[in-house]
Image 1: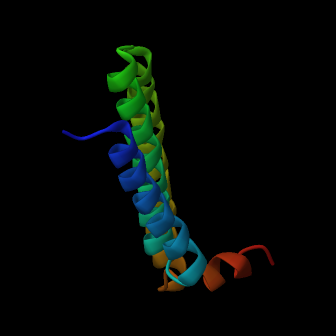
Image 2: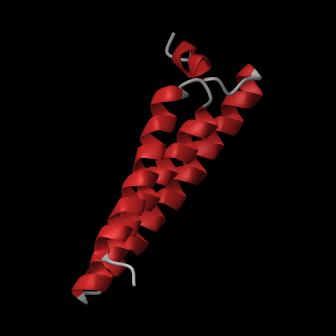
Length: 101
C-alpha cells in the first residue's frame, strides 16, 4: 500500500527535475516552458495526495484552477513563440532579450 510519503517523494522528484531543467537549460524556451509545467504538475500531485489522505475535496477542486492557469500559460507562451519565430527565425531566449532594445 502506498503511503503519503511515497506520493510526496515522487512529487519532490518531479519538482527537482523541473527546477534542474530550468537551471541547466536557459537557452531553449520550449524546454523552460516544459519544466515549468513539471513544476505545476508536482504541485498538483501534492494537492491530490493530501486531498485523498485527508478525505477533503478542496485540494482536488483547487487542482482544476491550477490546470486552467497552466493551459492559459501554455497557449499564451506558444503564441509568443510563434510570433518570435516569425520575426527572428529563432526561439532562443537570447533573442527575447534583444527585443528590449
